[in-house]
Length: 475
View 1: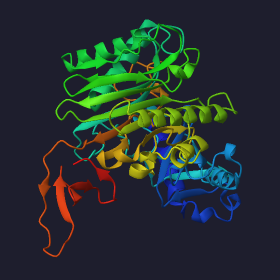
View 2: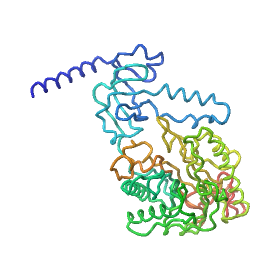
View 3: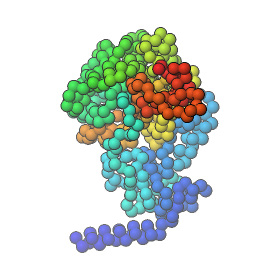
View 4: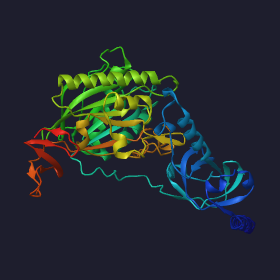
């Protein structure tokens, strides 16, 4: 026993000696001239690091910043000039460090985006180090508080649930035990979010999966508040999109509209549009729910995504021209499988004249992490008339930052954490027309009257109401 104690004490003394002789450095400034002079040295970093990725149980990937996918700020590779893309990609690779010697670290208790402070490590090769001493990690707590949505009356949650299938052994759960955990995790997360409309991607086609999820949500809520829209799709081994909603807050109305009208196309089941009416105010809008072509396993998938968004553009134009939902307000949500500056998203803004609400409200955030890089694959667009009816748009980081051990396939965790590989996007809405118009005190010399509606100031000109941006509203 004394021999073991001596060995432990000796090891601690060695670590203390190494740490006390460490060189203070700052990343990346101290390494702008290269790593060679630091190889073999023990260094203590004066800056914080963010955990960007996990490498099994052996290493962490760190950087002084969260690394954004190049296409968040540069044109995608399919768009021609890739100079900016490759420059960002090179900068991301240069700013990434691999930290070894973390075998005792509990990966279930940390997440991507957590901060490491006061790191001391021995440099073994360029951008690779071994931990010396203890690792101090901050901001590891799993989030439970929802983002501030600025007091909306309606909350929409757009979420990809990563293949929720009741047919075992296919795209989702492989066993009954896995399905039970998956159902519990997804339902727990969705009920916790407490949205009024859930726009969901990657449900198994048909009613079995969406009805099972709805029933579980009602069981957790303790009443029958939730219902689902029956898309009238047959049971089949393919993904679909679908809506679950609070029956006491909203009601679906109007036809289901399909940008792909052919049942022979997979996107007939992955792109749907439905009208919604707020019960308290009778105000209406439509939601276009889309799951466009995946990037996975197909380097030439951009043309299909472009076809998807062109079909979507045609559908929105027809809906507006024919006044199908008796309202010009359309919210477009879902998993678009394209980052902010990629061609499909830019097409929806530049050609379809939609507003990229994701960038307008929370441009520097993210909904997805691929390796060490983050970005928005899940997006919110709208017709222009929706902009001033949106109170906030934020991702809720309960999925993509967490180690896969939290997934239903790899452990016993039944919490809401990592119910999917995408973070849900939350959209707050205050639809127009719900309150009487009140006159705002005006300067006597003002020729234009101002009015107050739902806490916002508008302009009244000859009994017509305009936003401060000049958009005409119905009085």
